[in-house]
Length: 397
Image 1 (cartoon, one colour):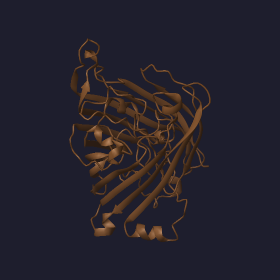
Image 2: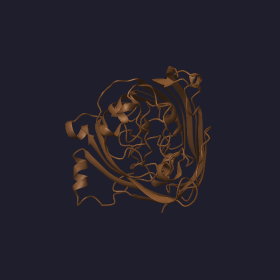
Image 3: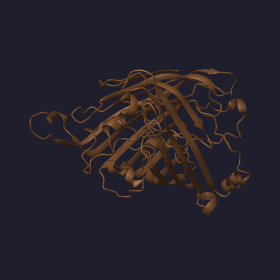
Image 4: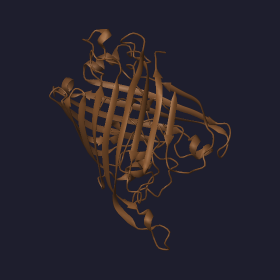
């Protein structure tokens, strides 16, 4: 596995070694990035705050984003190649109780993820830390519950514990353990989703995390280091209105699929960064703004029944955050720094299987991935340019 990251930021970084990443899956997978530090009480953005604990995460499962599809009627040798294998239940079917709940329209997902890491040399000091995320998701199928076709309701919450190797031992910019951040109980998603015309169009409204749907590549869920895992972390340095698990805000999202291989998606969210304050436990229901908007288009190469196994995903997007930002051009002139309203950015990300292994249906292969983010206004952007690149191999264990 090879990874590469670049940012135009100079900072003393110690040598850190990830000792162990242990994942206990009860039913699903949780992926997370670190949350930003709580901002000031005004909506002057956090582009002047410390970036030691910047970032957030992608949600536990993509139950609410609905990217999976039922291929049960397709012969095994024609199954589309999958980046991630289907989830299993560590504790089985709960003595038959779980399938009964699902038959009645209620699907619970209980997950535990822990990141263990140590720093043997360099940095601030040497030592070992552990941090973890305990998550509970509840998906309510409203078609089964109240005969509302295409409707679903999603609630998620998490409890985070532990300490950060980056904050305590290393002092690096991109934090080492992606499930650290917001070490308390969080109410996260409380959202209603409606599909139309067999999924050609879908909408979501409620408490949403933008990072559950935008800036997403499943390859990014294979790492522990925060520069890669979850959403490309550069966006959180430049946009305090961008949210990701375990933080969510009021918002609405609309997705349209003109073809089976393409989609157009847009979202609007309450961009008030103070909702990340852990004192609220994710239950700050205010709508003070400012507005954060984002749009994305995507193309899937292969990945449908009967396609070759060279699965690829290609995405382009842009965002605007109406926060008030510190104007760096006004800093250091013997008077208070000025501010500017608004920042924006563009991004692209991709993943592509280059060499499939084994027989059709084995879901094994070698692939590459990458992202590039730009926030052109350097007077307000902490990190005007950010990119990642790497490769990984998927195989049965």
